[in-house]
Every structure is written in C-alpha cells, then in structure tokens.
Amino acid sequence: MSSLLVCEGVTKRFGGLVALNNVSIEVGKGEILGIIGPNGSGKTTLINVISGVLLPDDGRVIFDGKDVSKLKPHVRVSLGISRTFQGSRVYPYLPVYYNVALSARSVYRDPEIARAKTNWALTVTKLIAEAVELPINLTPFKLRMVEIARAIVTNPKLVLLDEPFAGLSAEEVEEVIKIINKLNNLGVTFIIVEHKLRYLMKLAERVVVLNNGIKIFEGPPSEAIKDREVIQVYLGGGVS
Amino acid sequence: MAFAKPSIKRRLVRYVPSITIMVAYSCIPLLGIRGFWLDVLTRANIFALLTLSLDLYSGTTFYLNLGISFIAGSSAYVVALLYRYLGMVPEYSIIPAIAVAIALSTVIFLPSIRVRGVYFSVLSLLLPLIMVSLITSQPLSLYLGGEGGIPLPSLFSSYARMLPPRERIPFLQLTWFYLTTALTIVAAVLSYKLAYSNFGFMLRAIGQDEELAEASGIDTTRVKLLGFLVSSTLAATAGALYAAIRPPVTVDVLIPANTLVPPLTAVILGGMGTIIGPLATNYITIVAYELLWDAIGRWRTIAYMLLLIVLVILKPQGVVFHIYLKLRKAIATKLSSVTWR
Image (cartoon, rainbow over all chains, first blue to last red):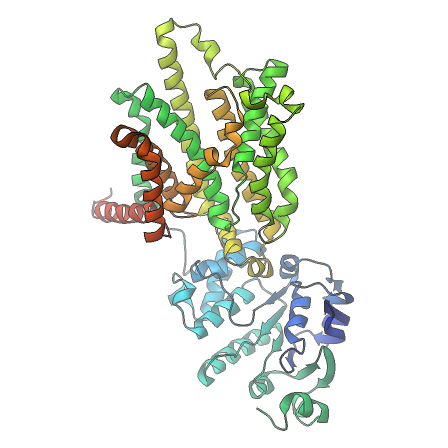
C-alpha cells in the first residue's frame, strides 16, 4: 500500500508545553488509522497540524508526495485533506445546505458541480430533509452528520475525524460507521481520533497511541489492548 | 437534483416590493418636494452608501469596521486637495479620489485584515482620530485646511452658472438627488446580490466561525479582503459625494459621531447583514430625526437616543428587517394567487 500521508518527526510546542514530541506516522491510501490516547496526549494537536490549523515547530507533513507543512488549511482542503472538529462545529446561523455548499463552492469553480456535490453529500448523510434548517435546531447526531457532509463534499482523499462518536447512541454510532465504511470503499482514507476503542476496533486496521505528545504504540488494535504501556497509560487495565 | 435555482416567477415575486419602493422613491420630486426635504433625502442617499458599506462587511463578518469615517474622510479630502492644488473640479476628481481612498485604506488595513480578532476594529477606530489630529496640527493644517476646512465649488455648479439665478439651486438640488439616488440604487442592488451570493455567505461563515471557515476550504483572507474592498468603495464614494455636494470639506467628515454613528445605528436597528433592513432604517431615522425638530425642537437628540436604546434593548436582532420580511411574505402570498400568463 503506497503512502498518502507521512508525518516526519512532527513537534508542536505551546510555550513550555510540548504537545507533540517528534511524532512520525504514515498512512496508506485507502487505510483507516485510529489515534487514541488519554486527554491531553496530543491527538487533536496532531489533527490540527495535519489539517493546517496549527503549523509544526519541527518536522514535516507530506501529503500525496507533497510537503504541505507550511500550507494554509484552505489550500490543504483543495489538495484533498478535510476534517471535522471535536464537539460538532458548524455555522449556527447558516442553513444546513450552506454549511455544506460553501465548502463545495470553495473547491469547485463550476457552480453546477458544486451544487451536485452538495446534494450528493446531503444524500449520503441523510440530511436532505434538514437542508433548509438552521443547525441550532438539529440533534447532536444530525450536527455530526452536517460536519461529515461538509468534510466529504470537497471530494477528499483523506478525512480527519476528531471524536466522531462522542455523545452519540449505539444506533447513531452504527450509522456513522456505515458512512465511513461506504466512503472507505470508494477509496477515501480516514484518520479517526476516538476515545471509544470498541468502535474504533471495528473500523481501524491500525492504531497509533499517543501519551504526553509521544507515540508509544503503533499497530493493530488487537495488539494495542495487550500492550503493557498502552494499558498502563490509557486503558487503565481493560478495554472501555 | 434535490436543490435547484428558484423559478423566474418566484424570483420576480420576491423582488416586487423592493422594485416598487425604488421606483416610488425616484418619483418623489415629481410630487413637488423641493428645497430642504430634497436636501435631507440627498444626505440620506449619501448615508445610505455608508450604511451599505458598513452592513456588507461588518454586518456579515462581525468585524466592526469603525474606519468608514477614515475611508469617507480620505476620499473627501482628496476631492478637496485636488481642487486646491491642481484646480480639478469635483466632476473630475470624484473617481480619482475614490481610487486613492481605496488604495490608502487597503494599504493601511491589510495587515489587520489578515489576522483574526479585534485588531482590525481597534485600528479602524483610531485612524480617523489620528487623521483629525494630523489635519488640525501645525504645520500640516496650513496644507490640509486645518479646522476651517478646504473650500471648493460644489458638484455641477459650473453648469448651474449657465442658468438664470433663480433656477440654479433647484437645478443643483434635483441633479444631486437623482445622482445620489441612482448610485444608491445601484449600490443597494449590488450589495444585496453580493450579500446573498456564495461570496456573501462566505463572509457570514467567517463571521460565525473563522477557523472553521478556513479549515473547510474558504480562503478567508481573500474573501475578507474582497469584502473590504467593496465596502471601502462604497464608503469612499459616499465621502467623495459628500465633499462635492456639501463643501467646504472639514474634519467633521472624519469624526465618527458624524459619519459612523448614523450608519452604525441603521445597521444595528435594521438587522445586521440583511442589507434591506439597514437601508430602510437609514432613511427612516434620518427623516424621523428631521421631523422631530418640528415636534420637540432641541429635545430631539435626547428623544432619538432614548428611542434607539429602547429598540436595541427590546429587539437586539434588529427591527426593520423583520417588518420587511412580514410585508414581503404578505405581498408574495397575494401575488402568488394571481394567475401568471
């Protein structure tokens, strides 16, 4: 499997705090990679560095053979990296349709293509009925769907999902998993940051475990739950 | 396709109230209204440009552009200086003045537009005040007119001189009214189209969550800069017209209480980012302020301020746009029942 994303020795500091310390990961095309770790371990910081919301202090981010370390987030979106945020960030006073369509319009110059892609993303996420609603009137599950629709509408090669299952019921999580699998079958690569390891085990072929900004494990989820160091820092003695 | 453009019929029905209002407003002089009230409406037209400028950028992005006084003032001073030093009359200096003001404001504001946060608003508030200090300080006041300002002939006065004396002022008043009305209508239509286009929605997205907008593919710096340029053009046009129609040009044009507070009031009361609400509020407040003079004389300022405070407390999301929406809905319902051939 050829590499889609390579992070080489990525370091990010906030003043005296080292949020990421020389982290290197590699993600293959079409792979689903899980990132786990306790609170404050650097998972979201890593997502922010890959998506361009934060720039690394050291190290490089190489996407599809191109060094994107210094590129702005919107440029990375046009190259094929899209993301969701922790806790469902949407434009609260723009209808669902525009929440999705603006991303499409920023990538596709042709308005007809942008409209068609928006309709496709709303259909995949089952949001057609809510398209004219304001996000403030939606349930947490539908808000998560708006985020996913916005992330996939730009035709990404890599989607970064930051805690996509947080606050959802088991049935709702299954719906999200179905969409992820469907897109993955179309060739989309995923990096998923998640606390709920039992769901991640259904999806990810590999997991990376972070602790205090350092990568402490990389391998299949089945081995992660047996790893002594992982158990000690994250699992606390058993699978959640 | 699940979502497509609305039909021509629906779009026509939607625009009927606005088109009716614009046509009716243009016909006001035909009702015999002249003199003082035509002057008030001309002034309201100029302030409408400032209101549109403020609403298009600040009403959508929530980046409060307190510097429209600076942009309008720069443009007004360029008109005056071009006459003073090059003998250029306003007919010829308005467009160069607008270009200079846009270039100047872009160069000064560009660094603050690129970053997030309050830097832009703080800079935009300070600039007009700094400019007032510069103009009134020695030795610059000798060149920039100081507190007395710079006198210049008013717009089209060279043409008015060819007319008999008693026809000159009515000619100028009518010409100014129609010129400013035409510009305001063009500016209003363009602002409305922009505010409700993808570009306008990108500005609104930036206002609601700039980090999210950037991370979901919007080039926020470019969109903000374009929005600022359009907004600056409107403010600079208002400033140049103000100088050309109401000479002499003094530091009054730079003082936020004169050129910022009325449009800001219109934007807040009208409904931020709605374009139509602030535009209507601009006319309502300016005409109401003059009518209050007849009713309560000098107490009008206090009464006006009290009314504004009450309205902002009761309807912080704006009043006029919501009334407009209700009217439009009623008219659209009525019109949709008509058989279209």
